[in-house]
Image 1 (cartoon, rainbow, N blue to C red):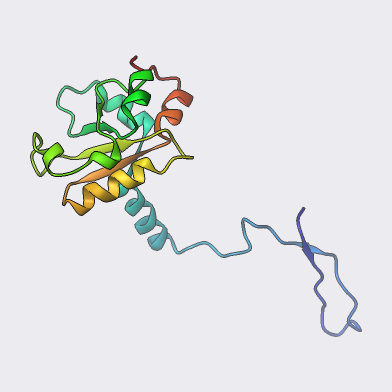
Image 2: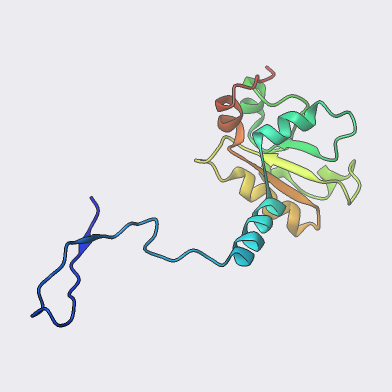
Length: 150
């Protein structure tokens, strides 16, 4: 429920004016457009989304490897087309040996309730590998109406 604030105008015996609603949207001023641009462009350097991955999967010259970082059992139950299964706990130089150091990895897990993609992205970055997280994970993929491979 929205709170309200009673303001007082000077010179009117401190009589209150009508309540002014406080909005959780506008209570904190917006960032300057330049700052907002920098913020959102920074987010896009760390993340991609299900729709963009779906579109790019039809490109034979796509510039990334799609990593499903869930368990082998979850992968077998359904995964994104052309995804490679490498659980986040098994990401190491030996298991990445087939990929050049410049290979961009796009990682995903179950979805917003799972931090496996964040763990995988942190590990890949620690190893000096380019990485982006596909926000939404497999749940976001299904929400978009895209099919899984079983």
